Amino acid sequence: MAKKKQFAGKKTKLAELPLTRVLEQKAGDEAAWEELQTSGATGSRQLILSMERKEEEAAGPLAAAYLQVLEELMVLQADLEPGGEFHPSPDLPAPPARIPLQILEQALRQAREGLQDLHRLLST
Amino acid sequence: MPFITAILNQKGGTGKTTTTINLGAALAFQGHRTLMVDLDPQGHTTIGIGVEPESFRESMAEVFTIPKKNINEVVVPTYIPKLFVAPATIHLAQAAEQVYSRVFREAILAQALKGLDYEFVIIDCPPSLGVLTTNSLYACDFIIIPCQISRYSLDGLADLLTTIETVKSLGLEELFQGDHFRILLTMFDKRNRITNEYILEQLKPYREKTFATPIMKNEALNQAQIAQKSIFDYDPKSSGAQDYYQMTAEFLEIWQKRNNLPEKRPNLQSCR
Image 1: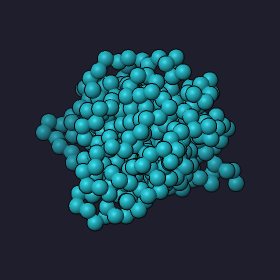
Image 2: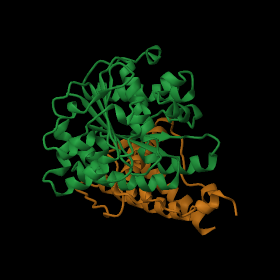
Image 3: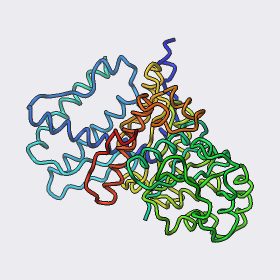
């Protein structure tokens, strides 16, 4: 077995520290927001998940990403509907800061296409 | 008021003493009046900077056992102008045992450091999370955590961050958002590619809290210990000297920001 593959699933105390989780979540939120802004500016559509990732046996992250997309979709929908309110599950990361309407519409389109792609990926 | 920095990691052999001596020397060479407090009963900062145990009568053991003893009474000069050391001997281990029965035992060092005429105080902590370490955590303004590239260092770092959070009474957000600590990667060896990749990935969330300069594995740093000199005196052209110079520059930037001072890049030439 390749040396690196033997590291898979090996957790350190540091990884399980609440502070590390807070920082990871913060970094994740910032990255998602930056990506959204970049794709909004260029008009290009980017799918974070790919066949390569699936082949790397990233089933855990893939499932987590799927849940994240679902949650963000619900947050975005709630934002579009007047008086709409969404209470995220305490186990899932908090939604990013308020997003401008134009980017929001584009994000909704991207999310829909992303979910379709994801569905195709998971069913193969 | 001095800027008090604790060099801390309960794991042994991570480079605490080497960092204390070379950061202290670099600051003194930059013209800053600096005191190194040796809080390790092994007394390696004391010996490492060329102060022999026979040359002083009192040490940090007395500071911890005699109530209201001021640290100035035990401080001795080093061979580097503007660099001083509050020395330690093995008696400090016994002194630490005795203070367990004292009230406010965590505040003994903070009390002893009051009103000192130094710009920087650097505390070399012992490799444990006992009463000496909690004293330094209680007294300090800033923490440097030397960390080797190894799995066990990461586990140690987790325990340490939890302890810092408790002793400093900080919440998770506050611990990260306030400028309380920096991780310093030590004994970094570029050839250990797979280990480096794994450890750096684990440390990714702490990127902003890690010195940009890692201290590379360097034989001159070991040899400087034997010579009882700072790396700037022993081999100023070594990679160890360059790394510690860069790290000191980063440290000074943090200090300048904390004190709203104008940014001033230190001069490499003044480190010999």
